[in-house]
Image 1 (cartoon, rainbow, N blue to C red):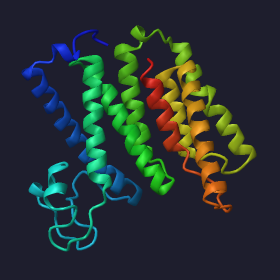
Image 2 (cartoon, rainbow, N blue to C red):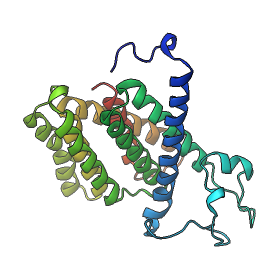
Image 3 (cartoon, rainbow, N blue to C red):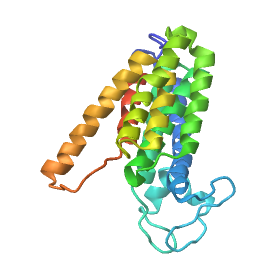
Image 4 (spheres, one colour):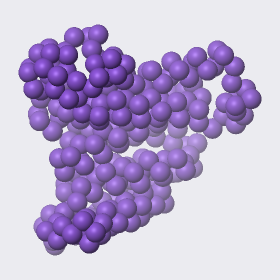
Length: 255
């Protein structure tokens, strides 16, 4: 963290405008994250395909794709068929903007801030997909792996986490989860195991154990709530990936 650089006393008009720019940049990345959240679970291409309304199939014009603003102007409805646009879209865009500001606030105008931001938005995307579809796309795990490698190559030494610690972090939770799944089929999904392995390499042993602890406690609380408060006794699985992502994000803040 660049101590003292961004205290409230030091924020002038120019830096405030820059943070607004950073927030808008984060909104735009969040808009792309929404594309991935919708398309990846449905195996829809996201490189060449144009955006269209899922109800009337009308192409969404660029002026209706402005993050947050278009949602507000359209009243949360499709311009053509008045289909309700899920609240997820402005929420993800807003959170992504806040994550961008947080990254720059903590790490300055640097590549490190960008990597932290991209990892955070990827975790957010994984959480949204897993919560809705109980699925963790390989594409997002691969993206996390790439960001993690860049992070380690560029900043690993400064974080006092050596190579052995990262290798141990890769295995310390993923291997027990894998072995448990061999003994108890479907105990964990393959996506959960790959996700925690990649994040273990990123965080190192101590921090991934903390992330796993947070994931287990929060996941258990959700399971208890569903089973004993909502009285859904038929529940057998919960989407665990979203809790892994929450634990990893919290642990990242401590690095």
